[in-house]
Image (cartoon, rainbow, N blue to C red; front, side):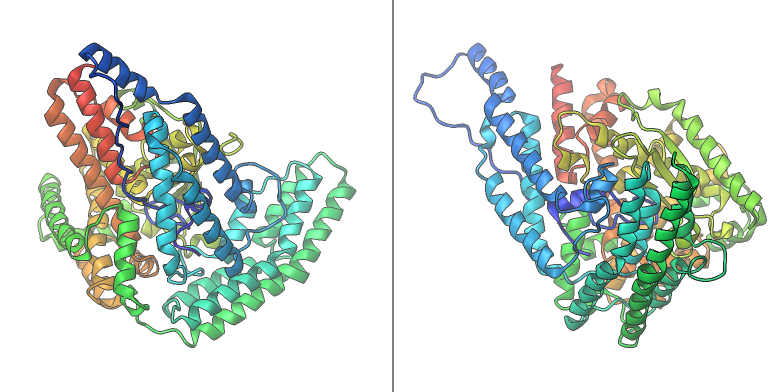
Length: 638
C-alpha cells in the first residue's frame, strides 16, 4: 500500500473504513502551504472607498472563465486517476472495468508518480488571483495533495500491504461482498472475472512484499497469524471443502439467486463461479499464504518505526501527514500525558456519582468485569446490541435541528462485522454510502466478542460512527454541490476522526449520557484516544516495546486486556495514524471556544458546525482559516 496518492488516494480512501478502531486503507493526505496571493499592480488612480468595496466584491467572485478552466482541470485530473482504479469505479457505482482489480505493480506506481508531477505543473499554471474563494481553496488543496504525494513517494516502501488492520487479500473479498452489485448476468460475469483475476493480483502483492523485504521493511512477527488466518477463512467452506458455503460462494449465490433469469442460467453462473474458486481463488490464496509463512520466518519482534530505514524521519513525516500539523513526537507525547491526567480526574467525579469505593484502577476493573455491562455471547445478545445501537442513532436523528443546518440525504444502517474478518477487525467502523444512493452509510459493530463491546460505550460509539459523527461528516461531504470530486471523496484523518471524537462530546452538551456509566463510557473513549498520543509516540519514537506499551495502556485505561493488545498491535502497523483523533478533536474544540469568545451572543452552534462541514474535509490549518473568516464576517454583520 502506498502512503500517499493525491487524487487516487482520495479515491481509494473512499473505499475503506473510517472508525474508532479501523483506519482508512489509504491515509488521507495533508497538503502544502497556501500560495501567496498578491494583487496585480495597476497604473490607475486610487479608487474611492465605494469603488474599492465594489472592486473587492467583484474580485471575490473571480474571473468566470478562469474559474471554469480551473474546475475543468480538477475534473480532468480526477478522471485521469479514476480511469486507473477499477475498484474505485465500483465504489462509485460505475460498471466500467467491472471485472478488474487495481494494478498494484511497482511500474504502475511509478507511472502514477510521474502523472502526479505532471498534474502539479498543470495546477501551478493557474493564477489564484483570478479565482473566487471556493475555487481558490480547491486549488490550494489540490496543490497540497500533489506536493504531499510527491514528498511521500520516498516512503512508498515503508508500509505494510498485508497486516491485521487492512490487507489486499481481505479487501478484495470486502469489495466483492459490499460494493460489487449484481443486477444482471454481465455483473455476475464480472464478479467471476474478478475471482479469476486473483492469482495475478496476488502475484503483484507478493512482489510488493518482496520489494519491501529487500529494503528491510517486514511487518512484525505477531501480525502473521492474523493475516494467514484471515486468508484461510476465505477458502474455508464450499466449494473448497465439504462445509457450509464459504463467505464468497454464499455471497455470489445469494446475489445470483435474486436475478430475474431462469434456474438453468443461475445454475450455469454458479458453476462458473465454483470453477473460478477452485481453479483460481484457492490457488491464489494458498500461494499467498505459503509466501507469508516463509516471510514470517524472517520477521522480528522489533515493532516501532525506528527500526525502519531512516525511521525517525519517516515517523515524523507520518505525524505530519496524519495530524496535518508540524507537532513533534515529543510535543504529542506530552500533550497525551496532560490529557490522560485531566480525563482521569473527570472519571473520579463519575466514581463519586455512582458511590464507588476504591481507586481509579479498581473502578476500571469493575467496569471491565461486572456482567451488568455486557450482553451474552449469543445471537440474542448480538441482536440486542444492534437493535439498541440503532435506537440510539434514531433518537439522535430527532435532535439534529438543534445542532445542524445541513443534514445528509443518505440513510444509515447498523450491521455486525462479517464473520470472515470479525476476528481481526476493529471494534467499530463506518463505511460511506454509495454516491449514487444505491447503498446507505453503514456503522459496523464488531460483535465477535461481546465482552469487548460494553454497553456503557454503546452510546458514544453510535454517535462517533453514525450520527452526528462520521455519517454526518462524510455523507454531507459526498453530497456537496459545486465542489470538485477530489474533495468529495478525499479526506484528512485529523479532520475526519477529530470530528468523530468531537461528536462524542456534543450530545452530552444537549442532555444525553444521562446514565453516569454511559458518561463514563464517553470519557473512556476519549481517554483511549489521549492514551494513543502517549503509546504511539512511545513505541515509534521512544523505542518502547510492544509489552511496555500494552502495560502502560492497560494501567491507564478501563478497556479489557484484549482491547489493549489489539490496539497496541494496530498502532504498531500504522505509525502515527492513531494520534490524529485527539489532535483533531482538540483543534475543533479550540476553534469553537475561540469563536464563542469572539462572538459572544452572536455565536450559533449550528452555524459553527456548518462552517466545519460545508467545505468537506480540510487540513486543520485550513479549517482554522475558514472558522476565523466566519467569525470576522459574523462580527461585521456581513
